[in-house]
Amino acid sequence: MKTPSPCGRGSGRGLSAQTKPFLFLPQVQRQRHYRGGYQSAGLKSFARQQRRKQTEAESLLWQHLRKRQLRGFKFRRQHQFGDYVADFYCAEAQLVIESDGPIHTEAGRWHHDQLRDAYMTSQGLRVIRFTNEQVLNDLPSVLHEIAGYLPEKRKESSYNSSLGPLPNPLPEGEGENP
Image (tube, rainbow, N blue to C red):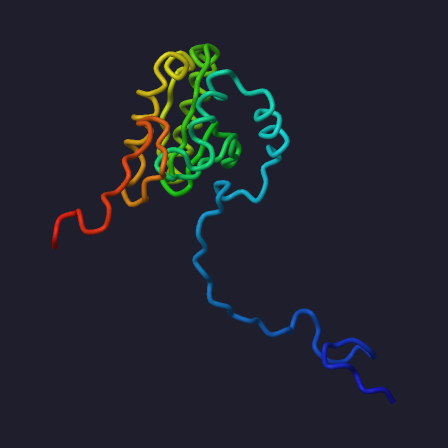
């Protein structure tokens, strides 16, 4: 006679699926996923397409946000949050930047933008919007406003695109004594 396996396989004796013991594991609080809680909402290819066909204003703004040029903060371009894609995103500052063209003034699109902003705000993000005309005609003011939303804790990069080169520190021994 065969002895049944401990898991109930074999001769039909042993524990059945209904009598398996339950394991109680503590629930671990997880940080929100960087895509807004979604593992993938199917927008990856859309975001890639948007990166390839960006507007002139988005391209100009990206040239000044990329490679940590603005106060040392890293920005992502066409970043997915749930069912939406943001033009620019800074994770360290929880900041979303939108560059809006003329299509965003239409009633249906305006309502969609309001829903998107509400969703992103509910995820703990701050959303700021600029028109393409603002970016193209007054870029220093746009960069200055964005910099105002970035925390002061970051070390300044050696070049700040909105303010020009930063001055070199004083040579050792020429500063104030503590």
